Amino acid sequence: MLALTSGIGFAMMAVVFSRRFLPVAALFFLLMLLAPLLPAHQWLLAAAWWLALFVPGLAMHRERRKRAVRGGGATIV
Image 1: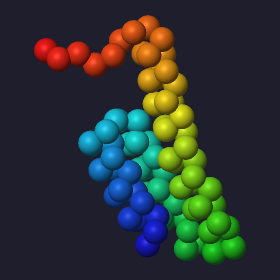
Image 2 (image 1 turned 90 degrees about the vertical axis):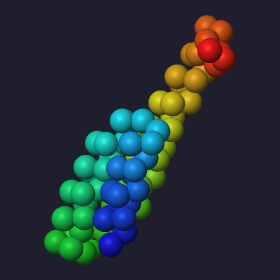
Image 3 (image 1 turned 180 degrees about the vertical axis):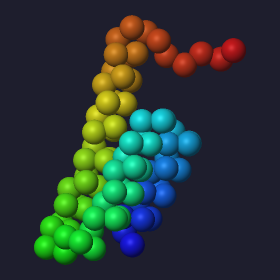
């Protein structure tokens, strides 16, 4: 159930924030299908959750730092 709701949450984040969350949503869809088959390894869900939030967040942070160095701040049109 956690993998299903996580996948839906990451799919919504892909629509609202960035398309880079779509592969993460697909990962949680696969985990949802595999979790009942591997009950001894369901701790992987927690590791996948951490990676799913940390890796895109780190990429966004690096992009923001690069924009700050270049002086590409937000402008009012």
